[in-house]
Amino acid sequence: MFSGVISQIAPIKAFNHNVLEILSPYRPKLGDSIAVNGACLTAIRLFKGGFALELSAHTQKSIALENYTPPQRVHIEPALRVSDRLDGHLVQGHIDAIGEVAEIKPTANQVNMRIQAPRAFLRLCIPHGSVSVDGVSLTLSAVHSESFSLTIIPYTFENTLFASYQKGRRVNLESDLLVRAVAHLLKTPTTPSWQEIDTLMMSY
Image 1 (cartoon, one colour):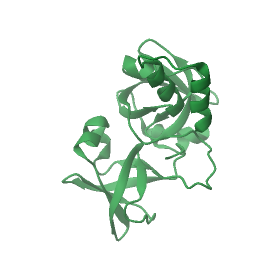
Image 2 (cartoon, one colour; image 1 turned 135 degrees about the horizontal axis):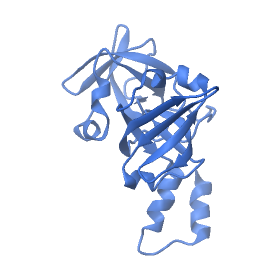
Image 3 (cartoon, helix red, strand yellow; image 1 turned 180 degrees about the vertical axis):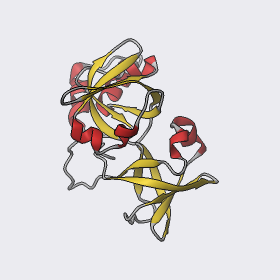
């Protein structure tokens, strides 16, 4: 589990034979979970100056794979510890969809970004709810028929890879865990009671 708060931006050394090598001073233990642009991956090897992770065939089909090639950089977040602060929101590292940056519009003290997304994903988006974009926890400012909008403060924009994004870039998206859980329950043949939904949400 992750929080969507990026711990560092790291360059990619290589991506060969399903193994992604990242240059970073961070030294995970073998088997540790690390979110790379929001996708939960497992550390399989350490080397001088970095670590390696393996991407399954399923993961490679589910993410914006073109953003995992050298010399590009990626967002890195180690898995949460029980004692950690939850400054973002609960993020599983399971990519739900791939979106595309449709607009980036700086204003006086914020940057407005609009991202096109599949309609199935947009049904899991609610105004002022949470969303993960390339692993970054953000708040939805508006939801449209084919896209959603974000209002990003300068600190977040400058301390993530967002400052380098351009129109047309594909990004990894993960919907809010609680919204996804409730939506799944409401699709079941037997509709749960509001008490059951409340119990589910309180369990998180």
